Image 1 (cartoon, rainbow, N blue to C red):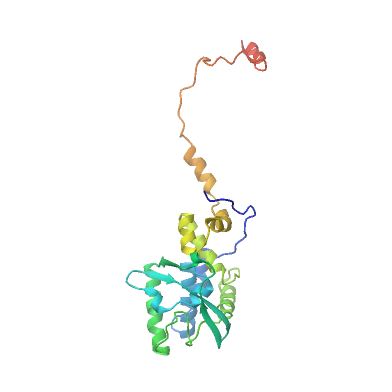
Image 2: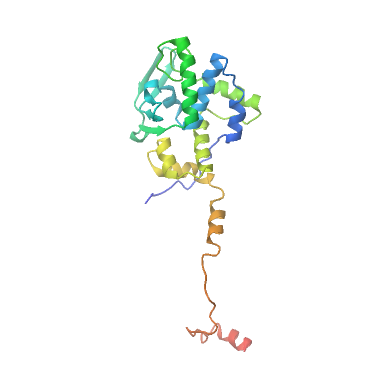
Length: 237
């Protein structure tokens, strides 16, 4: 049903929940710029959005009542003065996802702070009225990783971290596919399938005791005449 999956496992780098918490805990939301970094990393980790999708996100794309977040565009960023919103590469990238109550709370808090500084800014991840630079978040993330004592990752790895979190929570690969906006399930399984390390162990545990039977006391099928096993029967007789 799913077709061929890449035989070579893709190595993905990510942060565990504990590692991410160590990093995010370093950011002081009382500082406007650090609050911007906080909400940027929080949103990427908790939604699995691509950085271009998150940078293009507008407040009008979020329904705070239902928790529904619409992803319909991505940002093409060249310079601070040259950028534009474009359609995603694939149709599957255009999607809606539900965000959790904690994320809604954090977004509302950031919106309130942002509007005091920028007034009418519609971009979610912006501290200066223009889309976030493609260098800003990666550079800050590298510094924070060093301060937190965790290994450094690229900004895209926060997307992998979200997928890893969902897998650790036992979520279905099809749900992860839809949430990440993958066009094919093969992409999801080929990229993250190896992050299910205990699957075979759990299956073995579930199979234990499934079969029950009463051992035969005599041969009903009568295979005792087989020339290769006849010597065995003569020996035990």
